[in-house]
Amino acid sequence: MQVSVENTSALERRMTIGVPAERIETEVNKRLQQTARRAKVPGFRPGKVPMSVIRQRYEDAARQEALGDLIQATFYEAVVEQKLNPAGAPAVEPKVFEKGKDLEYVATFEVFPEFAVAGFESIAVERLSAEVADADLDNMLEVLRKQNVRYEVAERAAQNEDQLNIDFVGKIDGEVFAGGSAKGTQLVLGSGRMIPGFEEGLVGAKAGEERVLNLTFPENYQNLDLANKAAEFTVTVNSVSEPKLPELTEEFFAQFGIKEAGVDGFRAEVRKNMERELRQAIKTKVKNQVMDGLLAANPIEVPKALLENEVNRLRVQAVQQFGGNIKPEQLPAELFEEQAKRRVVLGLIVAEVVKQNELKPDEDRVRELIQEMASAYQEPEQVVAWYYKNDQQLNEVRSVVLEEQVVDTVLQKATVTDKSVSYEEAVKPAQAPTAD
Image 1 (cartoon, rainbow, N blue to C red):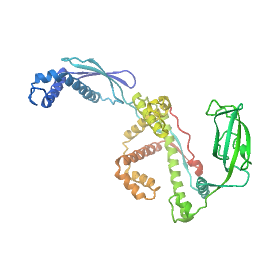
Image 2 (cartoon, helix red, strand yellow):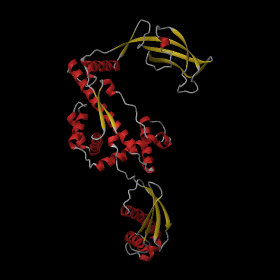
Image 3 (cartoon, rainbow, N blue to C red):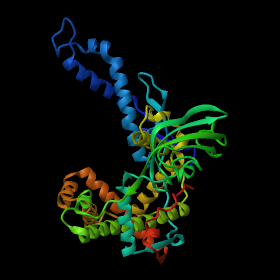
Image 4 (tube, helix red, strand yellow):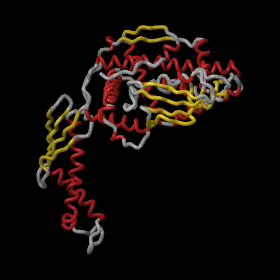
């Protein structure tokens, strides 16, 4: 087999492969012999059909099959021989494809970029530390109570945080417009659900009262046909209900799966969950800074095949997340290219860090992480057992741990600054990273 390779770009390779005619004929004859053992031809017993008849009937199909298999096999042999690492399937173009002649074809493909990860010392990381204070715990309990608020009819004027049941009709230039009217709508004042001025205009209203609100749609309103237009809303208040927060009772605790623990037990469980969230938030922020630093210090070219595959994965995820009667391929690729590029480049860089430092998942850390995740469930032992019985899920945890070990490896050489902050600041989501 003859092989020559041409570098047509930084990552694209054009490989010409020649396969001797003898090898082709050997493969064709092998298939014809297999066919002869099972072929059913009128006038002949199975297995007794003359090879001349078999060749006349089946040679063309056997040759096509043999050529396809040989291209696949010899391409693999050639990339191994040339020590190439294809990043996707090749585009194959036959040059000589005639009976009795050597097979010659050209395979064009991209290879994975070859690089060494560097620049750990240039990465700066701010590592936060925080504690769950009693005030943070009290605030969280109030959040949980508000999430379970109920409303009771109030015989008074409406205030912020009250829930109103309303009918309204919206008009522009005296004409009712599409989507500007509704009946029996529940609206919490101060929620910001309606355009500016709508909710504010209902403060002080009583059940049975009608108010006319003259408002203007914002310039950046999602419906461009309405943006920056003046509208008149006639609103009828059907009822006013005031919020009633639930008391910290056993019944309330039971909604969160906590029974017969009392207020102290409930507070302890909430604190434990907050501390777990805090640890994860700090870990995530450190990881994001490390990954951003690795991207900045290691600019590499991305194989188009890998980028296209990642874009397609993100398309599928978007359809699964948001639903709708749309096929993934109908979503514009440019919507996902930036995110896809970041994920592909980071995947290549992380893999190279693992390779350069000969990292393997620390099984003790794997178990610790599984136990940490399981602690959020009522039967943690069962959750731990489930992970160790499910290879796919267990390998996903190992991948997470390996990524954490990559972060630790970078932190050993990076410039790390420790900073004490409040719980709220520590758990506040960081700004989403962008691709370079």
